[in-house]
Length: 442
Ligand SMILES: Nc1nc2c(ncn2[C@@H]2O[C@H](COP(=O)(O)OP(=O)(O)OP(=O)(O)O)[C@@H](O)[C@H]2O)c(=O)[nH]1
Ligand SMILES: [Mg+2]
Image (cartoon, rainbow, N blue to C red; front, side, top):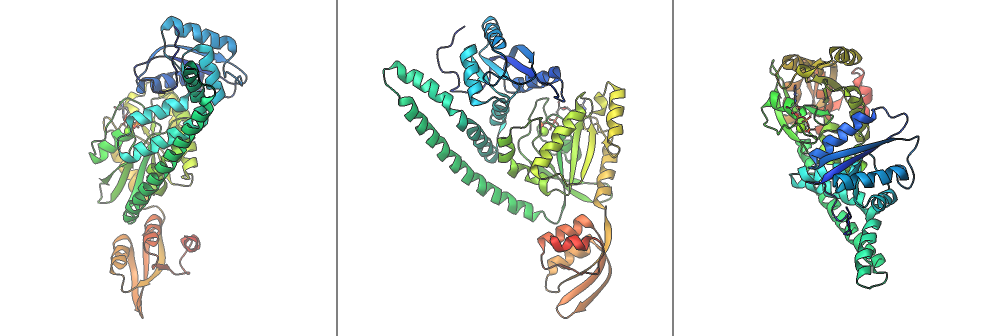
């Protein structure tokens, strides 16, 4: 079938019949079928109906069409035969490749980042998430506006004008740039607000649930806190951070956050825009890295999550691996390899509740990690600080010198770090052990 109207005025694939296209390059960790299966899940999450797929093995992408020209012709025929309106590529394409592919196939072409951005745009509920997604979309779109110009010039050329396309493109670009700076301003104020919220939580132990999309993060959140977060067998069901208290047996309390899931090659602009949302993870005392242990690509998903964490600046955080969906494990040998590779991991089923007590124990242990003896000094007038130190630490001795109170106490490293962050007037005396060297640098 032939489409004479512009194809990329609208990148959404909702309700459209879609073909998937993938290229298998050497040295890619995840195999082609698995990647196409994930792309199919993404396409369906975005609302498309997948009607066929094509893959090609290549040593490197074709610079002009990504796939070979012959394959592009094959795609055109298949699109015609299957009455497809869109071809979704399992890669990110350059603006030129997109343009060439649309010309060669005569249908709309969408790349993997655009597809993920479309899903995020559809799922974003809060105003913060909407701003973040729109910003990511515009930043990804701006360098691709050339194609819009092609379409615009085609339309305007039809009514007999010469060269207005270039002008229109300039107008479009300016409009987009203005919108981008407007969104950035709004995002900055959201970030400021969030930072002050995070600041208020400084005296609590914060744990963030992170993990590949669909790993069961929200199910875990609901199971331990009764939060009522939406759970779905869909990618990117959660786009907003939810935070709730989790009371551990034994009386300790954790502030637990559930947030957006990660995926292999998460579009870079999206990570940048979601930094504010993902800030929780960055400031957390502990990350619970939830893994779908029943998935055959679990190990690659762990790696993908680790690389996003690195990009977010969380590489140095304490991480507890949580192997979830144990109830759904079919290949026990495969599971055993996974478990053996992560000896400190806790095995659970968030859906049935199995293993949650063990998880609570492991978290409690993390909380009391690194208990040490320190000497501190604080102004006698700071009643709140004094109360907090007494509540968190185990006071061994205490004395008053002038206007300051000196204390020797046993306290966990995360606790003393947190208190110190919120109360700069707390002084850690130099003859305290190890922490204190780093303490000077805080
Ligand atoms: N069998 C089984 N299914 C589970 C378990 N935990 C979660 N699920 C299912 O896995 C799917 C995804 O669960 P979610 O909790 O939404 O996953 P998520 O990690 O929050 O996903 P996103 O927010 O989309 O990134 C749902 O269909 C859950 O019912 C489990 O322990 N066992
Ligand atoms: Mg979720």
